[in-house]
Amino acid sequence: MTQSLEQKVREELTLYARKTVAKGLVVGPGGNISAKAGDLMLLSPSGFALEDIEPHQWIRVEIESGKVLDTEVRPSSEVLMHLYAYRENPDIQAIVHTHPAYCIALTLVAQELPMLFPDQAALVGEVTFVPYVLPTTDLLADAVAAKVGQHNSILLENHGLVTTGKNLREAYYRTEVVEESAKIYLAAKAAGTPKVLTDAEYKEIQSLESEAYRVQLLQKLQ
Image (cartoon, rainbow, N blue to C red):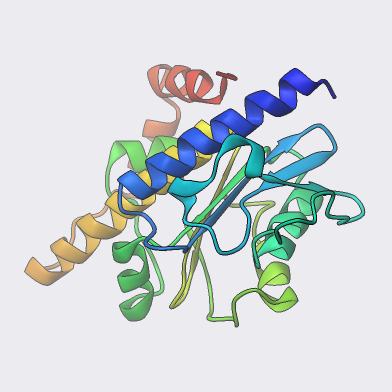
């Protein structure tokens, strides 16, 4: 791993941390994000509001051993959730854990998020749910790790959202799309019975060459 790679990841984490706050996906010191840099993950420090983290303050943690290499400040209390997810699915390069209002509201009243519109179908796919588990515990880490092999977006009941991606950009935009999906679904349910995409319509969107191209661009390193 080169220093330039680690510095690039630090700068990207800082950028998307601030985007997360600007979009209202977390409030106060809530939420945590991470990204891989070689054999390490760089994770938000505990107790920091995401918009206040500077590039040099992201905490280095060895993925295989779990050893924390920076000890002046503790890593996020959800460090196990991030570690277990990276270990379970090595294709994951970034994780965004947020507390979006509409996503949390949805978990309070429903156990599904149907397929509603093309961006959801193309960029996210099926969203899965995890029943409420005490935050910051290995129980939550295990529950999330059990899902990351098949799903890139996981709603945590009474808690929030976890999204993964091949880079931070992909993980972050999945967060935005899932929150928008939850908002649309709740609004539609309040007005009547939502018309959702059928499985055939969903698969048809996913098969579009134009959508495949868009996903490929999203996954390219910045």
